Image (tube, rainbow, N blue to C red; front, side):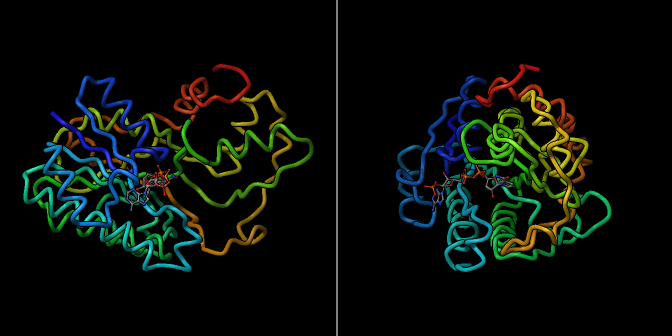
Amino acid sequence: MTYLITGARGMLGRDVTAALRAAGHDVVPLGRDALDITRPSAVRSAFASLRPRTVVNCAAYTAVDAAEHDEPAAHRVNADGPRHLAETCAATGARLVHISTDYVFAGDADAPYAENAPTHPRTAYGRTKLAGEQAVLETLPETGTVLRTAWLYGAHGPNFVATMAGLASGDGPVDVVADQYGQPTWTADVAARIASLPPFPGVLHATCAGGTTWYGLAREVFTLLGADPDRVRPVTTVDIPRPTPRPANSTLAHARWAAVGLPPLRHWREALHAAWPALGLPGRTA
Ligand SMILES: NC(=O)c1ccc[n+]([C@@H]2O[C@H](COP(=O)([O-])OP(=O)(O)OC[C@H]3O[C@@H](n4cnc5c(N)ncnc54)[C@H](OP(=O)(O)O)[C@@H]3O)[C@@H](O)[C@H]2O)c1
C-alpha cells in the first residue's frame, strides 16, 4: 500500500513518515516544495504519478496569530487544500486521513469535547481548520478520516516542551499559564496510531489521556531536565496577553476509539517520559 504524506517536512509529517516506514509501508513524503496542496493541478498530477492508496494530510497553515491577520491565506491551505485532496481521493478511490485540531471548538466547556460535540471556532485558524474538516467529511463520507489532535510536541519542530527546555537552562522564575487545560501529545504517538489505523469514516480524537495545564507541563519538563520545578510560576491567561484568544479547555474525549477497535492513546505523562530520549533535550532519560 502506498502512502502519500503531505506537509511531510513539518513536525508531525516527519514522524508520520518514520512510523509508516517502520511499519513496513511504502511511503512517499512530500514537503510543500514538492506538493503545494493549494494547487489542484499539482495535487492531480501527484496522484497520477504516485497512485497513492492512502493520503495523510499533515500540511497546514499553523501560525495561529498570523492567521488572524490573513484568514484568506490560512483558508487556502487549511480549507481549500484538504478539499483538493479529498476531491482527488474521491476520483481515484484513495483514502484520506486529515489532521485537525481542538481549535474547531469554542474551548470554554467544562468537560472534554466529544467527537460529535458542536463546533464553534473562535479564531481564524479554527474556522479554516473546521472548513477543511467539513470538506473532507462531505467529499469522502465513506473513506475520509479526520484526526483531531492538540498540544503537540516532537523532535522536529518548535513546540512548548522545547521552549520550556530552553528557558530552564537560564536562571530565575518562568511564568507559565495555569488556567488553560489540555493533553500534551507526542507526535510519535499520533504517528504510530496513524500507521495502525484501519479505514474509519468520521472524526477521531488523537490526544494523550489525562490532562494538565501549561504550568503543569512546564513543571514536568523542568523535572525531567533536572531543573527546579519551583522556578515555574503559575500565572493566568490575562497576565500574558496574546493577539489571538487561546482555549481555556483544549481537552478532547476519546470514546470513539472503541468503535475502531483501538485503545485511546496513553497518559500524557507516560508519553512525555517515553519521548524524552527522542527529543534531543538534556536531562535524565526517564
Ligand atoms: N502543533 C500543534 O500543537 C498542533 C495542535 C493541533 C493540531 N495540529 C495539526 O497538526 C497538523 C500538523 O501540524 P505540525 O505541528 O506538524 O505543523 P508544522 O510543523 O507547521 O507542519 C505543517 C507543514 O505544512 C506545510 N505546508 C504549509 N502550507 C502548505 C501547502 N500549501 N502545501 C503543502 N504543505 C504546506 C508546512 O511547510 P512550510 O514549513 O514550508 O510552511 C509545514 O511543513 C496540522 O494539521 C495542524 O493543524 C497541530
